[in-house]
Amino acid sequence: MSKVRYINNGVDIEEFNNNKEINIYKEKELDKENTFKIIYTGSMGIANSLNYLIQAAELIQGKGYRDIQFILFGDGYEREELEEYVKKFNITNILFKGKIEKKVYSQYIKQVRFKCTCWEPYLSI
Image (cartoon, rainbow, N blue to C red):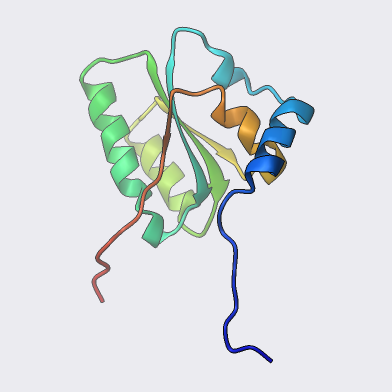
């Protein structure tokens, strides 16, 4: 038995392109023509540092930009806390959409201008 294991967390380009053609899904928030859409897809835990993304959305809203929308796809143990913060501070430019299947990912990516990734490089213990 090998002591080395390969765990793929990347993208299969062929599968991604096939899904783009086969799986047609529409998300009404992604169809808004005059909105700059920023999406996040993935886990919602401490290492994903979505608090920074939410702070950015809060700042953008505070500056009066109404045509920028943050759409978060995913789930995790911090999701509820993040949603409560957004609700408490009336941050209206963020939508939590829940987990999506990987096969529809390509459809969502092609409908947005910006896909972000968040992570916390230094965790304090």
